[in-house]
Amino acid sequence: MIMSPYAARVQTVTELTRSIRGLLETEFSFVTVSGEISNLKRPYSGHCYFTLKDREAQIRVVLFKGQQRYLETALQDGQQVICRGRISVYEPRGEYQIIADFVDFHGTGALQIAFDNLKKKLTDEGLFDSRHKKPLPFLPEKICLVTSPRGAAVFDFLRIAATRFPAVPIAIFPVRVQGEGAAEDIAQAIRTINNRETEAVIVLCRGGGSLEDLWAFNEEKTAWAIYESRLPVVSAVGHEVDFTIADFVADHRSPTPTAAARDVLPDRAALARQLRTSTGRIHNAMHRKIDILHRQTRFARQRLGDPTAMVTHFRLVLDNSQLAMAGAVAAVFHRKRELLSRLENRLAGLNPAQKVAQRRQLVAELADKLQVFTRMHLERKQAEFAKGAMLLDAVSPLAVLRRGYGTVSRESDGRVIRAAAEVRPGDMLRIRLHKGQLRSTVAESDS
Image 1 (cartoon, rainbow, N blue to C red):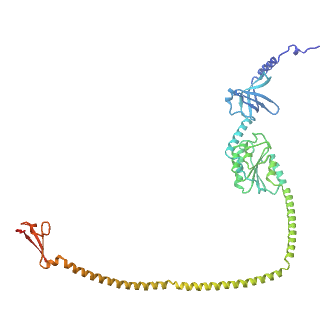
Image 2 (image 1 turned 30 degrees about the vertical axis):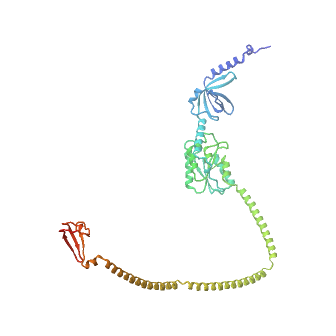
Image 3 (image 1 turned 45 degrees about the vertical axis):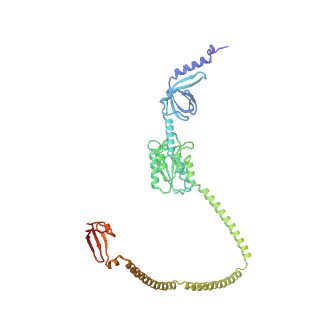
């Protein structure tokens, strides 16, 4: 029996695992690996654990908390990154992994981050809002194809367009669809078409490719040119699985250039079939309607009978109605005339001119009576005044003075003197006569 030299010593699992770990850490002291992040986990420790994969393989990666300060942005599933670090083996599970020192977002990973950031920014600014989407016309007057004239996409579009509706004119605006300056060419072509055309549909056409190849349709200047376009814009960029910023801003997104031709142009053959079907339906409906109307007409004639007899009957009815109406109108006129005559007689009795004349005569009579009564009243008052004056004159002190009497008063206070005892020698007295006054001094008084 021959024994293998490797079977001479039996190792434990731990020993073998440590041997593998030493071998890997020695042979792969520092590695640089690119791939896509998946199964990203962040436990309470703050370390990042994720799987770095490509189409055929995967490897676990650990990024410790202290190394995360060098990241340009937070890690996310689906990012394309480049990890630099050391190969190690996690002994409890017997798995090898990368202990990452740096994670870079270069290449497709950086573009994916830029794509996501721009998408979020334009979403916040409302460029993707469905309210701004313009509907595509049923049959466009013209199609303006913004594409590379040497790409396969333009030929796919033209081939399908020729089978759909070849009568619609297609104008090709050649632009660069990849590389530096491509976004400026696309934006300028969109603005040029809007300045030249009044009724057209703009189609952005490009075949598939990587994210870098399609980047001209992910730039902000392209997005704003599509958003500001007065004409509807169709985005037909890449394959069905490819999405660009232009797809979200455009009024319509077609998964491929071939699909864009079908979306923009109706199928002429299908329209012709539909037209023939609709025409046949209209003819059948018209024939059925005409048959129904013919039957209704025949039935109505049977019910109506001879229309000339009906006309004669209605003429007689009309004549009788006219005579009755004329008599009714004459009777109404007669009653109205009688009423008018009665109202005129009543109005004549209430004529304001007669009333005014009567009132004037009454005023004249009252004025005459007032003059007579006024004159008689004045004469009566004058007689009463003369009688009172005679009585007043009879009792007037002046009448007494005319008979030779006088009134004596003290000049100092004007007091009338009625007795000699009221004065003293030397008092000045004023004596009033019928005509004039006298002043005298008391020499002596004899009381």
